[in-house]
Image 1 (cartoon, rainbow, N blue to C red):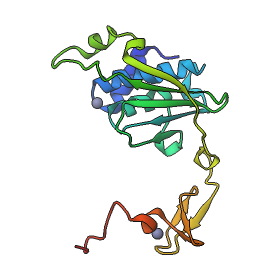
Image 2 (cartoon, protein in one colour):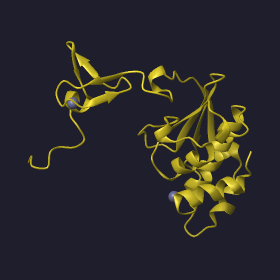
Image 3 (cartoon, helix red, strand yellow):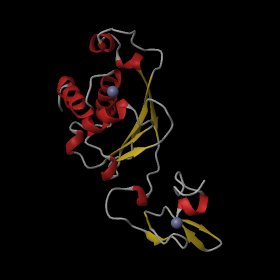
Length: 184
Ligand SMILES: [Zn+2]
Ligand SMILES: [Zn+2]
């Protein structure tokens, strides 16, 4: 296993700055991996991480674990929480770790010093959880693909919506996050 310093250095290099999120994310990822019996997360294929925000700590969790959105072993849920769940696919064990919002560094303080004074038990809330990882959510080739009957775009991984036997993509079925530029 890398040292904390090595992991933090890698996280900062990838993320672009040192911040509380890098320190918390590195500690969270190291703790989650360790609790799941994974010594070297980057060399272990059976780890999936669910992150609950798209802020600083997400990058640190990615660099420590080697999990990536594009590899399907990093899943993003838009909960707006500084939390992540680490799943060991080989043992079926999962650990959810949420950082305690009471610890917030005052302006201008040395972040490494500030956080190193807070032990894991105080900084984190840790729970053993169960995650039912569906086959179509696992890394590997897409198991299911279909075509939307409206826009005719291809939909992978079972994300299509079927109503009254009609197959649509989520955007056509329920509305998209975008609209055409020439629409009002
Ligand atoms: Zn940051
Ligand atoms: Zn469509």
